[in-house]
Amino acid sequence: MLLSDYGGRGAGLDNGLALTPPMGWLTWQRFRCQTDCEMYPQDCVSEALVVRQAQMLAHDGWLARGYEYIIIDDCWPAHQRDPTSHRLQPDPTRFPHGMKWLSDFVHSLGLKFGMDFGTKTCAGFPGSLDFLEVDAATMADWGVDYIKMDGCYSDPKIQADGYEQFGRYLNATKRSIVFECSYPLFQPWRKGVYLNWTRLAENCNLWRLLEDIQDSWQSLRSIMSQYEAHRKTLIPVAGPGHWNDLDMLLGGNFGLSLDETRVQMGMWAMHATPLILSVDLATMPPDHKEVLQAELVIRVNQDKLGKPADQLDPIAGIKIWKRSLTDFNGGWALAFLDLSDDAGFPQRIILNLKNTGISDEGLFKLTDAFTGTDFIITNATEPFEVHVNPSGIVMLIVQPFS
Image (cartoon, rainbow, N blue to C red; front, side):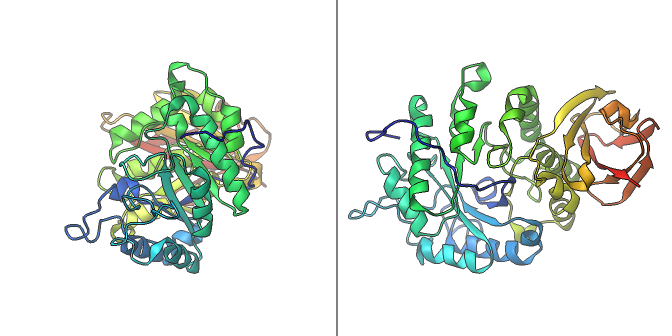
């Protein structure tokens, strides 16, 4: 981003949005940058694709569970800006009615509309270099509710300034727009180089910080392991209005088993990260859909306390995470996670609630977060068993019982 008119630090984004992690659907992981609508009519990034997916998101139980954003990632623009207004414009063949029409259609379904762009998009389409103010006004005029600004082709040394400046331009439009920043992904913070997380949280509602997720267990496991390794940095910076984005949900595509889909859904809920689908909703297998619409898991993700889970000491190789909640009578969520894929059979551990730091007197009800079935009613010291599948998860809601 070229900051020729940058005038110093502003007052931050200050939009009062994303008080819980955003939920929705996004094109990228599943549909990438497919622009050949003749060869791939069902899979190309187009108005028709967005219309189809929006209708299913609105009417197939997704919106009722909180999935409210339809977000077009890269590859939607024409290859040139409008020569007179200098505004971005959509590809006229793939988006024949224009973005304002598409935004209005999405809104008519009770959904919200999101878009991606950047200095130059990661796929090389026109971006916002020298046009930050124009683009903020354009997005507001189109009725955009969510903007994901990529960091490809931008200078890492001035990314924080550029994103902050764009946030001020968004504020100036007076439209409520969730702002996702991608620049931490391009910064060497994982190597110990300083990143001002406070400034990031003041100017962005959420941020990408690790590599793009791919449709495989190996990719998912890598992202979870990196988050775990840097959790002492990442947990304190997340909270209402500012979230770590670990990238899209893969469930219902081609690369994850049902257990692995549960792992991602459960851990994204525990980590208080956005729940953004990237899948063809028309071909979603019913069992994966059930996981991704699991009511109690979503309630954990959306808990208003907004405090991500922290990791406890493992037991017999099983990783354990605990999240404090305001929901469920001020209870907790516990996740028991097996990241191995070579155990051959479920791992059995025995523990009590005191082992997890829950030592209150009285009884507690433990509920399976994915099925909603009661797991056990117990006190803090009574032992119970948990059986965790290889590359699997058990997620329990713990709440006081009387």
